[in-house]
Length: 68
Image (cartoon, rainbow, N blue to C red; front, side):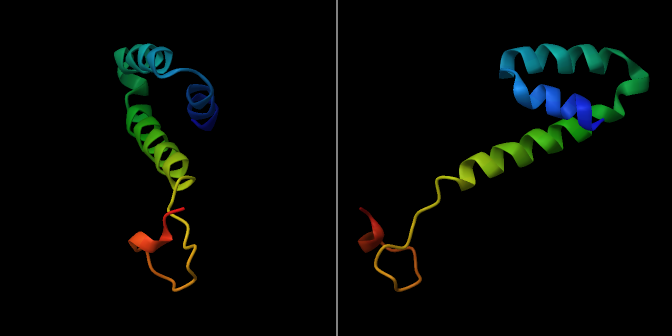
């Protein structure tokens, strides 16, 4: 399972969608669909977490005076 998820993470979303559709055609492998969706959601979350707002004024909150 993890090899499939890692492979999908390395390629573009269009290609990943095609591969995912091929996997879903095989009923025996349909349980992979949920695992792949969860992994892609986690991957998306971690990519977005790289862009969190930094606290530049040191007051430990996310307010407008934190903007650079």
